[in-house]
Image (cartoon, rainbow, N blue to C red; front, side, top):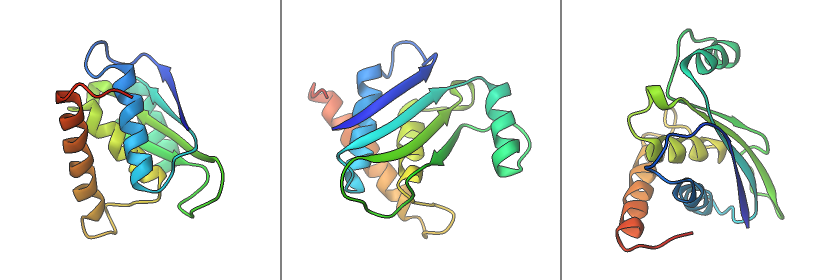
Length: 138
């Protein structure tokens, strides 16, 4: 089972916390990870700007940052995937930011993979929407 830890103050309402956890599971499963832990943290613009500067050397706030722990290699047993940090004030779509961040934890990189990550992200977003429309839950 994938344990999803939520930190900070997520946006109220849509998506629900259960849906955020479901999207994490969906993204992790796409990379063959079914057992482990990851954290989603919701922060303000000041905090994400500081993290962006400290870890990427880029000035200013951004929408989502990922901090992988286990790396991209497949492993047996539970995985400690890492942390996804999301700034709701800079994010047009929380669902997309969640998927984007988790795919980065799995080692995907849209700046180097000729668009494969973004195609998968869009596909997972569509699947999640279809599941939501059918009333499927985690």
